[in-house]
Length: 319
Ligand code: CDV
Image (cartoon, rainbow, N blue to C red; front, top):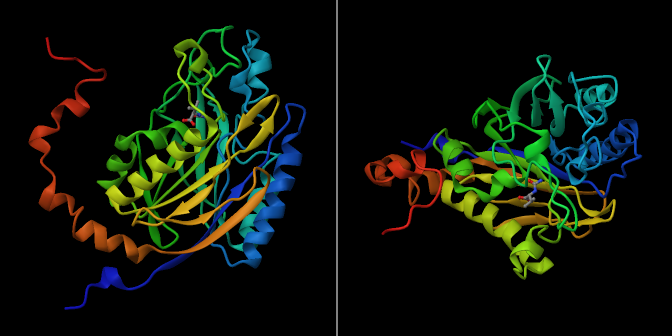
């Protein structure tokens, strides 16, 4: 009997990389830039567009702030809201779904680094709150710039859900999550076929001075792709990754937005560090091969040996 999972299911997807966002830039201006790329995506036949992490403001965790009113100016208390309503309306009119990263403050005062997935009818189908928060919680003046995600956000409290939507099984992650194999594997165990994520990655490691570790920019880009190509291959899923890139408020952010096939191959790659849309026709049925052969989890995983992964956080070396 023919395997129905091998029937092609093409989803045309865009990664809408954004160049720098100045601290003074308004949300309306950011949304206007997104609308330009959304319309280009429509012309190119996209059903889904992926915007970056924290796409509505500058990457504010680079500043140490003690006035929480100043901090809260970077957060959204509802979604959609007045600033993002034009994005929701235009995407619905064009029948394009989208991923949008933003800083979320809940009605009971919790702050998260959040992304939502909106379907082609304009409905929010899913929310994800970043789990692997990098950086630090207190001012560290020895750094060339701060990375205070641990100060401004709580770790996500939703886990790694996936959703059956827009013709596939989709999941979300945010930036640093992409460096952790657990992110992909938890969603892999739920059958993910396309993992979408946004990122803000400084071109230099801010803690390198502390550790005297040389990490030139080419390594930052190499690691960006290395982890996502491995995650895609080992879980036989598409990965769509969108940067906020370029020289933002004195800090250089890498580009390298890309679309990665379930084989681990990059099939579309941004060339600039500015606003740039890249597009690929992603056949979700291509996930089937890996999921049913080398990475047929139910046949080959040996969970009796994996207990430590979910019971121990740090390394314990032998005596
Ligand atoms: N926004 C991020 O999560 N950035 C991290 C940096 C700080 C390492 C990243 O993983 O790219």
